[in-house]
Figure (spheres, rainbow, N blue to C red):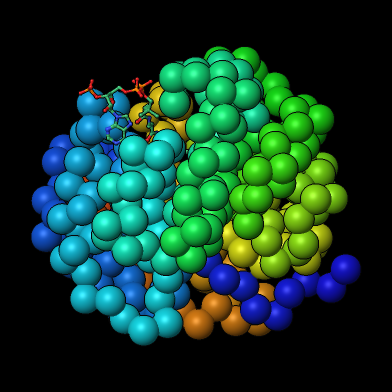
Length: 307
Ligand code: HMG
Ligand code: MG
């Protein structure tokens, strides 16, 4: 399999990144971040989630953020919806795509969405049907596909079980996520191959956290399989409130630096991404986690405080 010549990055910083920040980030700053990301060329942006504000208070301003965005033609704005209540609220804000999020392990499913895997799919089924009835595409995310903070190791069989459940209820796209960043390239290829048994290449994506420094290697391993859609998070923001110790998602700037070095097109402007990363890191009062972001800021002569 030759590596793809073009890759689509789904920017998840505003949602997956900011959901994990202890300090509050105002809706205006979230909107400003989305504007900077779309100006940098992002065509897929995961903006927020319509989850319980008791569970994830950081996303309680979901409708305000969605309403504040000056939408750019050609950009797709997605939101997380764990159940029908979330979907109904989300549809009012007119997302282009919604995301249902399951888990490869029972333990993580319970901690993250308070139900078993089977129960979660019983909840997702009407969400998928209602989203489709409203003309909205549905992406599915499988958390903890390569390791679980509560169970430990996760097998490719466990991943495939959930891929099949996604397929059975009509989820359009299958995102396979290394929530705690313990996956290594061989295991990642084995898990991704299971997703590719049930979904076409264009509808399988990888979502990697960099906790153990494996994220870029794991993306490269996916490129070798021809996979060409990945989630990434500006400035390396993020984590998951129900996966303690997991560091941020792989930084968008780092992924873009690698892909452009490989001659793979992304449609993204790295300099503008670095600006967006510096902006949100400034809001949070810390330097970007992105190695490429920090290096490029240093090259410009911008002082980057050491964390
Ligand atoms: P529950 O407590 O079992 O829900 O939570 P419930 O149906 O029993 O309802 C309890 C209360 O929540 C009720 O309110 C409902 O109205 C309300 P009350 O009567 O007590 O006032 N409620 C809602 N409110 C707003 N929006 C909703 C909603 N649903 C119920 N959609 C639930 C179940 C799924 C709601 C909860 O567990 C939850 O919100 N979990 C979200 C957790 C989350 O957002 N985690 C992070 C995202 S996943 C992730 O980051 C991983 C991923 O990025 C991949 C990776 O990084 O690797 C995808
Ligand atoms: Mg994540």
